[in-house]
Length: 197
Image (cartoon, rainbow, N blue to C red; front, side, top):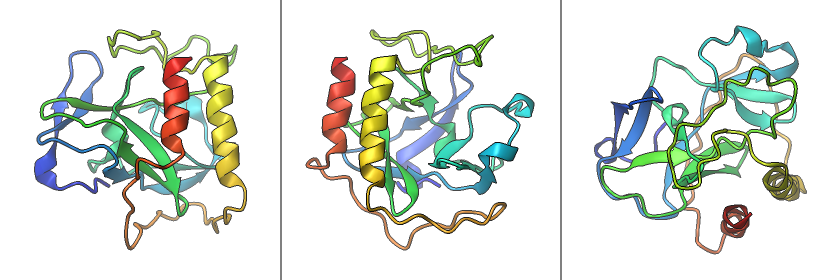
């Protein structure tokens, strides 16, 4: 579900990546763009090989993912980039998409999919990147070094966090209110480290 007003974004067809989300107005750094809502699914029971739509599962817990309603518009339409202008942040057991830089009018809103390093299970790999940024790696998979940095941060965020009650098949409900991701948030330091590696 998008949290920015409808006149701030639009869905457009891209040359190589299918549909994408574009800013119709400037989106300031720290603004929460959307909440990744959908049905809670058991990772152990989910067959990725039969998922013809691909790349729509979003991490929820180590054993659970979120699968969005593909008939609706939402953050699941935001494409991957090796040089993203948005990021994800867990807050109150929700995955929020927020701007890590000011996103200018007309610019595509992008995110790093933060996929684990490529291994023999991902062969042939369908996760090629077509972002065409100056730092494009050609893959949506993180390098080993970047993955370690990201996992360390994720693990630190789990310490003391309340484990959500999960009912598989239930749709995750929106929060009553949403934060702005302030510039002092430790996630910015992690993003900066990932950009340097």
